[in-house]
Every structure is written in structure tokens, then in C-alpha cells.
Image (cartoon, rainbow, N blue to C red; front, top):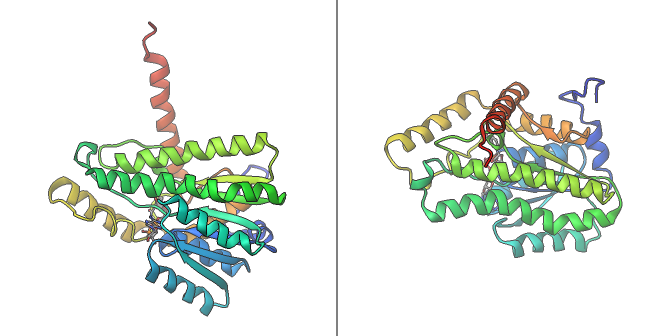
Length: 287
Ligand SMILES: NC(=O)c1ccc[n+]([C@@H]2O[C@H](COP(=O)([O-])OP(=O)(O)OC[C@H]3O[C@@H](n4cnc5c(N)ncnc54)[C@H](O)[C@@H]3O)[C@@H](O)[C@H]2O)c1
């Protein structure tokens, strides 16, 4: 890391070191950023365990990593179900593996004003994005602590962890949750003197299929327009997933807590959030 705290975007020395004699476990590894994290980790010589709810997607990523000379294996895992994440951990740990990197990446979007979101969509988004991260932490972190070796938990939130708006409330609730969960986890592990580092990813737009899978039954009108606009935004302006994963893995392995693809956007959103909380502090009524 440079003296000003900035991490060179392409310096993966730390990540390479993290992978020595260790495996990387990545959820949501069947597509987008998760596939990117898995491919970058494999290219650095890490053995990678791929987890995703979608079997064909997982198989395609495993084949791609194998074809590039990397080592990967897969387990179909629905991160909403604790028993499936625990089974994933049991499978990995039973072989005496050290988990050097755990990426809790699996995530889904749902667009629309909160009062219109169907209960099954609310539960799907909260189940994958928030419970999924907790499940990963609960199933893997005790063993990572017990290993007594340096390791990193990288929880994937979003710039949405700092925003609150009309269209993405469900998603933003979960991403605020992932940020707070990560802060609590980092404080707890530090107080316990554990060699497990926590990082939280707050990426900006990345060119993935997340809005293809959002809103299984897309309504017409404002919500439909918003989904279409977000698909266009990611397709036209999103960062390539491999580049995004490489950038954020470099930052995390160099010790950063907050990692991102779009530092300027993150700074602006953090300032806006801080302003809102300052308003609260200034205007709250004392009883
Ligand atoms: N793409 C972006 O612009 C962007 C920006 C900020 C944050 N993110 C976050 O990045 C993460 C990855 O998203 P992405 O953009 O790569 O999307 P993506 O749709 O390309 O990939 C998400 C993967 O998660 C898997 N998944 C969905 N439900 C699952 C479940 N129940 N259990 C296990 N796997 C499941 C999907 O099958 C898919 O392979 C998410 O947490 C997302 O919120 C994405």
C-alpha cells in the first residue's frame, strides 16, 4: 500500500501471498463479479471452490478456469439456506483445507417502490443478499479463526450500502445490512485478536447480468422503465467484471476495509450520506 493509503489497482502481490497453501471460496461464482473473483484467484494459483445456486452457470465457470490452467471445483449452494452453506463448509474443511479467502458475493436485485414489492421478492432479496452473507460468516469464520493464519473475508455490498432511494429500497436495505454486518465482524475479530481480516466491497456499476435476473415478473410503467434503464447503464457503462474483481481483490489483500471499483462515486455518496446524518444530528428534537 502506498504512503497515502491508496492501493495500486493492479498490485496482486498480497492476493498471491494469501493464496499460498490455501483455498478461496466464492459464492455467486456462476456469473459476473463472483465469476471474476474466482477467475482472478485461480489465475494467482489459488485453488478455488465455486458455489452458486445455478448449476449450469457453475459448470461453465469451472470449465473456463480449468481451460485456463486453474484449479476449481464446485458445489451447488443456495446461500439462503444455512444447511447448504454449512454443507459447503463441511465439504471444504473436511479435507483439511485452509480457507485463505472467503468471498460472500451472491446477490440479486429487485426494483420497485417498497409497498409494491411482493413478499416472495422481498424475502428472496433479503435471503440471498443479507442472510447469505451471514450464513457464509457463520459457517466459515470459526474455522478461519481457529486456523491461526492470515485470511480475508470479503463481503460484497454495493454503493447502495450508502444510498436510499425510491426504486431500490429492498436491495439497499440488504446492502446497508452487509456494511454494518462487516463492521461488526471486523470489530469483533479485531477484539478477539483473530488473524482474519474483513473487507467490504462497495462496487459501482459492473457489466453483469444482475438486472437480467431482477424482477422475475417485470411490471410495465415506472418499474419496467427503471429495470430497462439499469440494464442499459450496466451494458454501456459498467466496468468489466474481471477488471472489477482484480481491482477489489488487490485492495482487500493489501488490507483495505472498504474496497471499490469507483472511488470517486463512493466518496460522493459517502459525503451525501454523512450530510443526511448531520441533518439528523442538527435537527432532531430533544424531548
Ligand atoms: N453489477 C453491479 O453493478 C453491482 C454493483 C454493486 C454490487 N454488486 C453486487 O455484486 C454481487 C454479484 O452480482 P453481479 O452483478 O455479479 O450479478 P450476477 O447476476 O451476474 O451474479 C450473481 C450470481 O449470484 C447467483 N445467485 C443468485 N441467487 C443465489 C442464491 N440463492 N445462492 C447462491 N447464488 C445465487 C446467481 O446465480 C449469479 O450467478 C451482488 O452481491 C451484487 O449485489 C453488483
